[in-house]
Image (cartoon, rainbow, N blue to C red; front, side):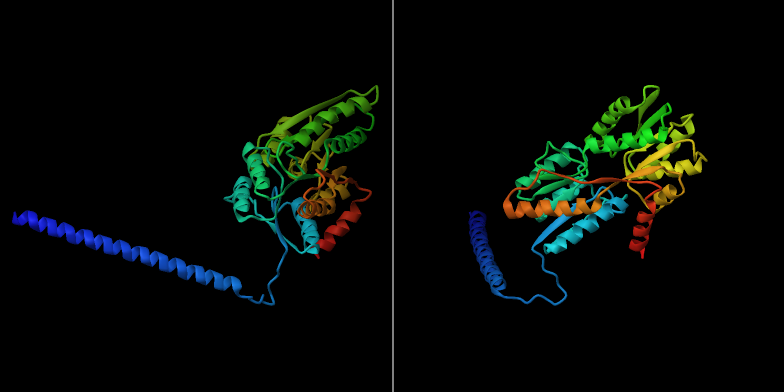
Length: 352
């Protein structure tokens, strides 16, 4: 009986202690809540001055480039940044360099959580990125696709070229290279970066060649796909083409900036200058010098000033009016030996 009584007393004491501890904890939580609420309200009511070196912007947009160090995407960013500053908007450039731990999908998740005011990107065609683009728009964040479209998404606008422009211009240059003779035209495409516009352009180019060639011409148009994951794979794939494909096609059409660079380098490394004519896309100092020397006949140039300006215009119009044009078409020009000096001068001024 003594032990039973002791157990009961001990249980009663522990129960009372637990109750006291619970009451103390509840009191502490309530007290902290009150203090935090007061502190937050006090901060909100303060009219804190902005330091002299701090910029205050009306909106925050973010550009997710295909490759941050690409000459093409740097030019687009610079143009868009200038247009953004004119409307007191901060444009942030995300990093997608080789070795980056983040993918386009990762950045979209971060930007949605951060509630930025607008997103510019080149979609990769995956369902994951499309769904995240839709999620962003549903969350009130307008999305503009750049140089490549995803019409199945809820993006508010697309800024870039169309397949007819590409096909028509490539056809004109390819036939010019053949100069009325028969021959082979090969279109280089990278599976890692190929997009619907390029795919349709390639198909249309084949049709345009057939329609516009001379009656006496026999022209074979072929597609050569490179299976690549990174820049090194693209370079190796083109090297294999130069080693294993004999004779080389009369005209080699490169559908993007990287393929143009790699094809030109292989042309030099394998002493194949004069064996094939490269028609490129966009340019670098190296490509401009090759055009000046007559090694590369021509390269296509997208109007990066227009791309950047239209991207910001689309986002600003959407914020101001609730809608914008679903498609902004940009100009496409050609660099040849006749006008390359203008671009060499511009490149030199930018470096200076």
